[in-house]
Length: 119
Image (cartoon, rainbow, N blue to C red):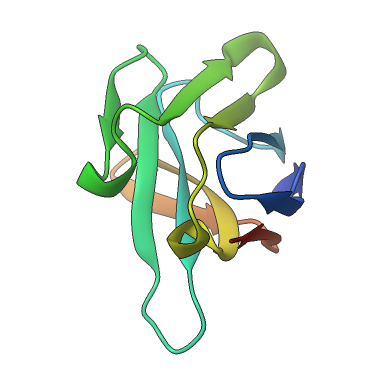
């Protein structure tokens, strides 16, 4: 089993910054992709950013230039630095890790952390 524990959410004014962390533990294959997704009330869950174990990143257009995803492979931890936050960034942010091992796909989610940006 894999457990994901997120931290760093909270309330911030527009233009401010927050840093999210997600620590993964358990049986995680070393070649994996970790990422952040978010879900605003009444909307579907959307991709924010992902990063592979090789360091290849992918961002949603809405956060490019403002958010930075990074990871510490030794700690199985992924971070999301969020700058220049906007009210439309308000959502529950969830951490994800996925990997393929012996032809079986694994996909795990954290419990989510609330990010609220006030105008």
